[in-house]
Structure formats: C-alpha cells, structure tokens
Image (cartoon, rainbow over all chains, first blue to last red):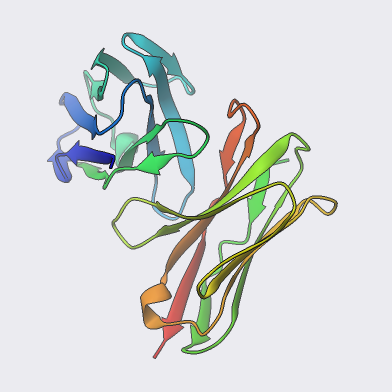
Length: 110
Length: 111
C-alpha cells in the first residue's frame, strides 16, 4: 500500500529565515505530487504540482519554490520567510484522479 | 464565482442525529465527486468518491450527486462524536486537469 510522509510535523521559524519541507511517497511509482497550504479557517490552496522529476508547475506567485529531485520526493523551499507564510502545509500524491494527503507540517513564522 | 461552494458551518448536532453536508458547483466538466474528512491538525483523508450522478453508500455514510442541479451531498446516519471533523468536498474533470476543493464544513457531534 502507498504511504506518504512529511517532515517536520511542526516548525517555528523567524521572519527572513529559510525553509525546507520534505515529502516522500512509498509504494508507488511516478506519482503526481502536490503542495497545498491551508490557512486557519480557510480552504486548501494549491501551491505547486509535479508530474515528474524536475517538472514543477506553480499555481500562485509567491516567495516559495518547489523541487522534485527524485521520483517520490517533493521539497518545498523558501529563501526568506514572511509572516504570511504561516499555515498548514500539506503534500499530496495521486496515481489517477484521487488525491491522497500526508499528515502535514504546521509552520509558524514569528 | 467560485468553482465549488461549501457552507463552512460550524455545524453542531447531538449524537445519533442525521447529518447532511452539501456542496454546489458551476462547472459542467466535473465528473468525479469526492468527500474528504479532516480531523483537527491532521491531513485530509479520502472518505468517499462517486462518478457522475447517483448514490453511493458505505456504512453510515451516503454520498449523493445530482448533476442536473450541480449539487452533491454527504449524509451521515447515527452520527458519533468520532465523526467530529471538517468535511471537504472535491470535484474533478475526467482528465483531472480541473480539480477543486470546497472550503470545508466543520462538524461537531455532541455526546
């Protein structure tokens, strides 16, 4: 069966610091991978998606970036965090139409 | 106009009640309809999925799609405190190129 991991689970970072969140998927090959952000009391905002190694599509302009160095690894990064980057970051994968989410990373920027 | 509209609630019901959660949409291209359940501080989990119109039942949960009205529902029978969560609807076109989530409805089942 497929499993998706995210780490860290929680993160508190100062404004202006860098960010690296990691997501890995087990039990499947060549998945589509997604990064979502969920702000408090708000819906899911799609940030990036990837259909293959090195292929990244951005849905919203911002100071975040994503990379996919391996088939089942997806990384979300920032060079300098803003207060507005706080939120719950979710990685998801799909092998077809349905999307399956990881446990999430709660990021607080102070 | 949003692709998917969902009442955020919150919705509070007594244990044992029947719960009805709903979403409306405007895009006729949507063919696949999903419900996700998200417990507090956890990732959403796929609860039910249906294709096109009709009903699908899984235990205490029933998903219903009315494409003519562009309206989908999730019914929970004999609701339990463990059903307390946020429920998100989601919809997709056949190719998956158009995939949208509702904003979620917060449900609390009171013992």
